[in-house]
Image (cartoon, rainbow, N blue to C red; front, side, top):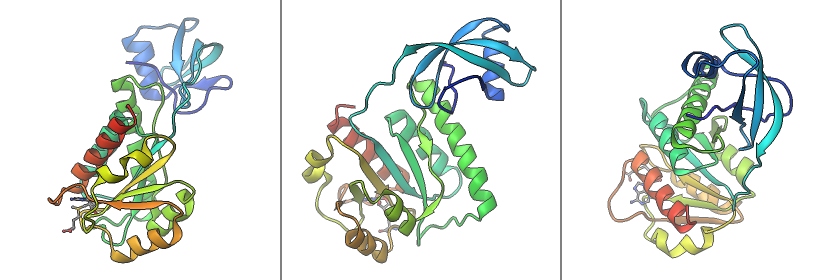
Length: 240
Ligand code: SAM
């Protein structure tokens, strides 16, 4: 597995306790060794281990080994909060499929309601899952988990990008709009178990400059299935 740090590398930095254990115990590195570390922007540096207190190692970057590969645009998954561990599963699979960012959305029909303290906890856990998934599948960057936002907040914060909304009441097939999302940024927005509130769709259509509601077929998919089906199709269209 690759060694990552979840921040951009611009000077000496601390490795997380998990990565420190991996580097010092599993890979058996010692203070003074050099190793390749990829940062959150996808750049890989040769770094020297300058100190370790057993829990966290300090590294200093020596030289840039691999510059960031320019993306054709970002695929962002905005998804309604889901019950149990389903959102974790979506984060993991979305990271494997190549999203740049996952935005958890507290929508009107979400069964799950998170208070402020639990939001912080959950986001930290989802970020960890995204980082693990990125390492496992050999990505050069770590998808970022946004703060939990309301649907209105989502439209406000990401409204400069085109939205593609798989909507259970839509009949226009996704295939009909695929050509328009082959390059550039796109936000794929999936409803929660209870689906979208009609007012959310109305808000998106009224406020967003570019917004397409689409069907994923005649069957109602579970939210997590819909997220992965839509992502897989979009990634295929973009040449992965
Ligand atoms: N409770 C809703 C209902 O009974 O109509 C179903 C919601 S579905 C479980 C969760 C989300 O998955 C939807 O809001 C939508 O984003 C997406 N979805 C599921 N099936 C879909 C389909 N056939 N076409 C488009 N989107 C779909």
